[in-house]
Each structure stands twice: as C-alpha cells, then as structure tokens.
Amino acid sequence: MSDPPTSLSVVPIPRIEGATEVPWDPATAKARGIFGFDSMDARSRSFNMIRARLLELQAKRGWRMIGVVSATPKVGKSFISANVSAALSRDPRFHTYVVDLDLRRGSLSDFFGLVPAHGVRDFLDGTSSANFPEAYRLEGERLVIMPTTAGKTHSAELLASERAQTMLRSMRVSDERNLFICDLPPVFANDDAVTVMGRLDGYILVAEEGKTKQREISDAVSLLGEGRLAGVILNKYRGGVISEGYGVDDYYAFGYGQTETPPK
Image (cartoon, rainbow, N blue to C red; front, side, top):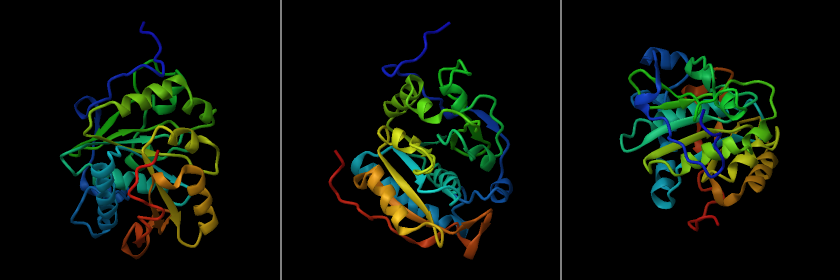
C-alpha cells in the first residue's frame, strides 16, 4: 500500500490517453448546453472571446490555473466553466482540464452526463485510495474532466487538506501546456473559494444580469484580490435557457481592475 500524499508530494496528472472515455457527439453537446466545442455555432462566440483573454494571460503572465467563481449561487457559474473549458480544449497547443472543486454542489458531472464512482471529493476525503481523482474524456474531444460527487461535507477542511495541496501542487508543476479551469463554490456561500484561490493564478467572476448586485461584485473582488481578476462575465443564463441566442451577454468587463503588473 502506498504512503498517503502530503503537501510536498507530486503525483502524475491524468493524461487524456488514460482518462475514461464516455460517449459524446455534437447533438449531445448542444442538448446539454455545451456550445464551446463548436466554433461554427454562434453561441460559442462569447466563449471564444473569453478563451482569447485567458490565452493572452497565459502568454503574458504564465497563468495556467484559473478559477471560475460567483458571488452567490445559481448564476450559471458551472455553465460558464463547462463552456470556457470546451472552447479552450480546441486549441491543440494546450491540454485543457476542467476540475470541479465545488464539493457540496458540484454540477459539472450533470453538464457532461457523467456518473463518477469516485470524484474529487472522494479523493480528498480518502474514500478513494487512488493517487488522483477520476478523469474522463469525451469521445472525439480533447477536454479532460475531473468531476466531483456533490454532497454535504466539510468542504473547507477538505480543500485545505494534505491531499488537496498535493493535487493542486501536482497541477502546478505539471506540463506547462496543461491549462486548468477550476469550478469553485460561490464566494459568500462559505470560505472554500478563498481557501483555494491561494493556489490558483487568477479567476473569472460570473455575475447574472438583474440578479447580482454591484456591491456583491465589489466585495467578491476585494476578498479574492483585484490583481488576480481575469474578468467579470455578465451571464444571461436562465435555468437551462439561453436568452438572445448566447450564453453570456455581449458585454464583458475584462480589464476590470486589471493592470499589467503581475500580482505579488
């Protein structure tokens, strides 16, 4: 039996070749609201713009680990995570991973139609003895998905645990071509997002038109750090319905609080 990982450990990151393949096709993607894989679909345009911004930050600052977060629940945060990672995965220069770190209410498995036996939460709490959470790949696509099994748990403690630090450190020191989109819990739901952000390069803040207050955005940015903000996305996602033909509004606040001086 192998020794348990510690914060100083580094373990191999699952490669796409070793991930469990699940059936997938363009019709399935559209039925599940995942438009980022198809550049010909007009609904992917918004996610292509976000991809361009993230790749700019990767080139200029070396940012490879990006959190997707919202101030409050139910504003389409995981919808954005799924579609941005799908759009990023089309760039053959990089290997794109999307990791569900919303341990209590993670929904990436629902978006991609996965039924993980042992997800991120099971890895962190020791239920799974594997060296890394289960990884999946979609048939015909280049995206690697690491979902979680959502449920009531001491999520803050798990995300601060030795196993979590090993996982995040291993992501950090992995192949420089690896890009990680981490779906985080809402900022004000608990302290999970703040706990993880110390290990990430930056974050996207998702807001919903007519629901998220400006004060909530400002408070979230103050808490997570203005220098790490990759952008604010105004989402118009409504319970599975894409309004006006797009997942997100045509307006982006990329550059909100941004400077060209890397954060300390």
